[in-house]
Length: 294
Image (cartoon, rainbow, N blue to C red; front, side):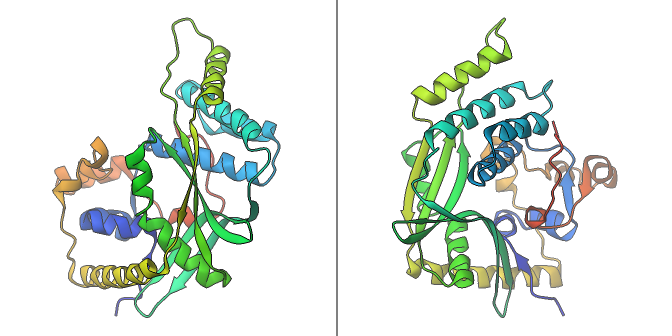
């Protein structure tokens, strides 16, 4: 008898993208030793924003940035995120909303699955409740904003937070930071580089707030979709139906983190030397390491 599967947004997406990817991460518990640089920058940025909304002094936030990256490899990221937080601290020193909760976890159980997750924040604006969602993006254009309106993840989260708190979630406030594309000039010091980032973030519109409403009609469809996914996951585990989806091997113009396993036909030496075992859904665990990984 298979227990109810635990589903997070990440595991739900992984199963839909490629069943083999789901098995390697959530059944075999494998994670690449080589970390994704872009995702790590987003993780550190999220932590800095969490500290900001907890009213932690800017000096402490800047110290966290210095500790989170290895300067010899990540000088650009240090300079850019330092500038982002300095300008953000000035721009949003007066919040338009009241912060109700930060890093709020939730759990939603049905007869078929247990859904777990965590939202960046819950805020109150004009007497109504919203989910606050932080994002970093290489480019913010009309297409990016349009995709937010059908963001399955945050609609799922809204449904669960409504259930947990017993309040109506009116919508999502997306707090988006666009990553600057400037580069270090020849003979430019890191202090000068940081100052150019500060000038860029001060003068250009690289911070964006987007309000998107939530419609309860769409939430019912999401529950139906999750029930279907949960059934397929249980069937896949029972019958070992974890086939590959080659269409996702190079999604987002980069190889899947498990590409080396698949192309080597599950070679044990590749697994032993390039991967480590990490418990599933580690993003929900407390006290994750903040040691620099680059």
